[in-house]
Length: 422
Image (tube, rainbow, N blue to C red):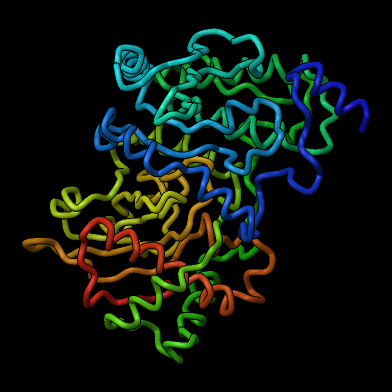
């Protein structure tokens, strides 16, 4: 272990994580003081201010730190900063120039690593790190693209492993090669295929496109039947119902008792494959948006996947699976082309996630909402899903209080909405 610490300090100049805090692939909810730290770190007023600089309808994503627990991980500035994820490198460079020229944003320090490595940052990192004076405080802000964000998610997972025994020189060569691959992928160049960790003398477990874990429940039919068998809601407010329409008092109860928990994406390895399929299928960040009253009033009828982030923001995308005639529950092949809930807050835990449906009108009307979310809740990569899906799904229903609180803030009516688990 001494050798591990020495390697990380030598290469990154920072201390590795304690064993108890390491790792990002977990099915456990984040609760207690850690949850409060996550929420506080979002600085929602700062995120609202950033929304006056960029328009998320144009493909920008304003989001919080990748590691909002502020653990002493290598590459601390990369993982602890707020982020503006840009559609591409060109828009990033235009935005960077605007920020430097904005009189309301005093840039104290900057580190621009768009085309080459920066001193003190992990090899292969591409992006821009800014320290900004905002409302009498200093805030870290990072600009990168969605491809660079993929690299960041991968690097965060690797750098936080407690049993690192990999020579940093080999990892640096592989990390830099990954950056070149992602740069080429963003431009749809075919002459730089994904590098393999094994060809760099590295263990296959850190490969960027590591094969996702096999599903514990092999048959889609068995998985769907298991969900159907557990549709019944058993809680203080519903017994044995498959769905219910809450009145005002029950909606208020849901909002008041929204769970103080955050849920991490269950498998970052799978997420990399999904990003690749999404982009190869012509997907773009504009396919996923932040909900506002204006955006909602212009929505078409249909089903949308959504997640509520730690700042209370709702992000969503159109579920094209149902349009192609597939069942929305676990309709993997077509839903991946449109993205999924894990795309909405890249690398971050969320407060709740699921699907909602809209009927067009003046204004449109929310008709149904559920908490079906394989990336965060019902992943059948988890070995315990068969044993406790009924208990878990009843608990997850309480997370919808965050969804309804967000709708209140936006001025979007939800009276008459039908609530279900799946």
